Length: 169
Ligand SMILES: [Fe+2]
Ligand SMILES: [Fe+2]
Image (cartoon, protein in one colour):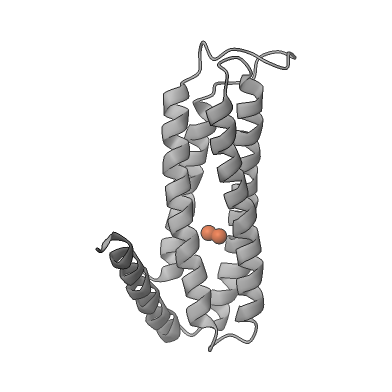
């Protein structure tokens, strides 16, 4: 499986996790600005958010490594790399904000949790959409399959080396 196919598979997984995260909070009820968490699954919500965050951070690293590796083959890879870093920063900001709002959650004002969760889900979806329709399809058109395979192997090696470095002594 080349790196672009792997990234697409990751997107599907993240869509599932984001759906699980928002579904755990239950549907919005009425017009009031607050409601308690009597029927929501707060632990399920936290678990889905934690899994989503870990998965997104690892995935972003793979995407960034891929563009860093592709720089010698693509004319504007540096520009794309900067664009991607900016988009990731905005997704990561929302992941962090979600964590803060969850920590401050008082058991009553569920709407603030739901608002940030929905915003995170939407931001992630529009980022996936951009990558799938613009970035990845362009990379597939531009890079010959042999180069794509070679880059995929280099990205995976770099990813493994990073992971080994982090878990090492
Ligand atoms: Fe991304
Ligand atoms: Fe992505």
